[in-house]
Length: 153
Image (cartoon, rainbow, N blue to C red):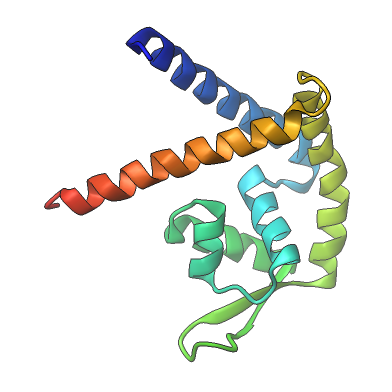
């Protein structure tokens, strides 16, 4: 692949990421929620009792960022902490009934984003595109890990 194509691909991915973040902010504005906060709720719906560190990794954000997100979700009483079943030091996070209700309401708005994206694809292409993007993300994440291991910083 020549540099022109690589630059175009990174430009396209960056543009899409920003567009999705912007439409997500618009769609979730009634709840004063970001897609990152929504993602945290969605993950806790599927995988309750995660620690803050586990949730941070699954949301691809730094622990400090997740601390701020979870604090806001707790303030709204959408998430609660309890002792983690596998660790004396960690706290377990779970959705509250109010969190589940809000998540259900927000999901309808997020589904509109998915519909917009899916509408740009031929039938059957959506799962293929998602799989390809995930493989690309893993490849780049692996490169980051390798570079960090090689760096003396």
